[in-house]
Image (cartoon, rainbow, N blue to C red):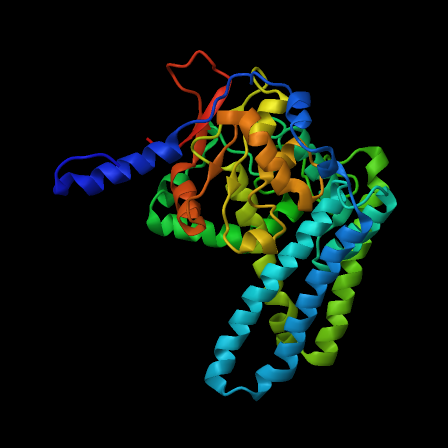
Length: 385
């Protein structure tokens, strides 16, 4: 990108790439309204089809069943060395497919699966419980995330710290070894820690837990459904316990446990990269509004996984603007709104492994720009004194 002598070319190319990913998206109030954006989308994109939605459920579950059948009936016949390769392949494939199932349950939580709330909640409860997710508990906290995206005070997930709140240990983790450790813990334990202890979530006056019906996350009218979520997770846990007695602990770990860990890792990675980027702002209460918060998200390219994950990865901006839109219309809607959003639409095609490392390195805390007049607009930084 640029001319000059041979010795300087690589440096100029890297500098150009830095400009691309560091170029901040606009943070001023956009010159368009949500209704104008919606008018750009073909009306059929907002139509939900029970038949089409269920087709994705059956498709994913069929593939998951076939993978399970192959693993249980053929892996034992393989030579030992091939078996050692086959199981990790199964874990990755099965975990990816089951993440697609997770995404469909996520659609149910947004009432994007069908026109019938009872059907959405029934399907979502069954699918999420199978993956040890408390469906209603997550549904309500996730709804508040969508209502408060980009708000430093009220957002629910991956809420960045300001520099003054960065822990003493952060300076010891601000190096390659520390980032490897941080990413390893985040991808393996991040999801269960969030559900059980609200790690990376917003601050509450008292202990917050997704399994606690009387926790501060939920209102009085939601508490009964939190109990239902807990019963769903406990029922699956009991089923797994019976499987352990019948098949053995290692069998359950290989068939179900490791793929579930892949699901959890993908879920955390996807969410992290959707809401963490050096070019995307966060706002305090003096600047935040819903539309700017919804636009402070990032679409990413996961290659073939985009389709496996029902495009939750590369249509996230449209999803935050219109969360009841079914996933099978989201790509068409994304293409329709890009001309309206202009620079307010943010897509980063950086390979995911590079983006994960870069964001872990660059996005340690948020702070305002000293020279900016917008004291309520915060940007990521990584410089620790």
